[in-house]
Image 1 (cartoon, rainbow, N blue to C red):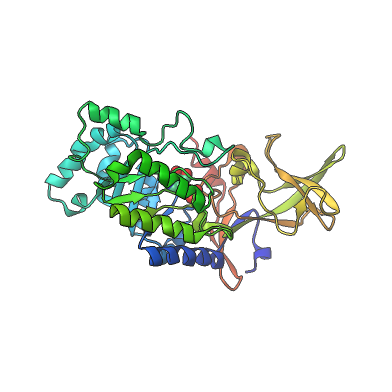
Image 2 (cartoon, rainbow, N blue to C red):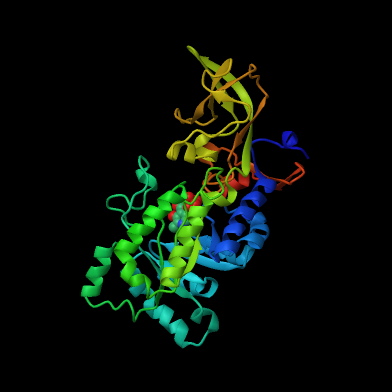
Length: 392
Ligand SMILES: Cc1ncc(COP(=O)(O)O)c(C=O)c1O
């Protein structure tokens, strides 16, 4: 089947592009010895996990369910970080994860007994779990995206040095704890210059402690597979930290794994006019199928289109939902658009399938895979039951 024969709306995973990204990431691993993990929060199309597992060291999860998915579908290194874990999750996490990263010393202390009990029981799997602490280097390298800045004022994400010193003063002995690694995640769609700046802050705030740990996880937000990304600087950063502090280095990008490796194909259902604005009603929705368009916000690339006014015919692209603001953006075309035309949004593999919803009872898009030769196959079709089963 070709892409123009797919029933819409449909996400299409571009396997050729995914492989190109994975080759770039694998190159970084080969040259530096760092381990790169897929951040499943961005892309959890587990159909592709066996392929991804051929190139990357494993996965990272935002909680038990993603960790379980990785365990079932990839079975490589399995890391998890969550601002707070529940007591009833800990047994399973200890069994299926290789690294568990806590957001605070109090969370670590809350679960410490369970971790120690596992170790005392002599269970090899539990004994092998490495415990980490998320640190907050308080170094913002991005502007205007407060919602995506874990180093923003009052952030709950990661222990600041002042907070760590306070619990140490109160009697916490870091060296005697199970904590073997530090994790930081501060970047969002950034180049390696931002990583270099962040590492200076990490060293300045936590440098004295880095000699005593085994690994450092530098989080995600590294846009490694973007054309203008400076890989040489990334590799310099990795090698510097690795050699100076004798650390095993992890990176856990999400976006970079599946950047530009997917489309969302949609059909024009109607065209309405309001004064000078021509509005396309699509069978997709920003609110339901690409929520980051409204949340971030951003304007997704659309094939064969230009900015509003750039080409002869400009339209506002919108959806079937009741939300007045469910607008994807204004785009222009060389030709007049007709009801029944198909349009293709690009870069729709990341933060799309994992975030979609059925608000208004909107059907979820099918998921299909486009192989290297351009042929497509549907790997998941959704229907009314998928809407109903999330309700009661
Ligand atoms: C802890 C953590 N790791 C990794 C990532 C993945 O980031 P990205 O998809 O921007 O590479 C995120 C994103 O929010 C994150 O919070």
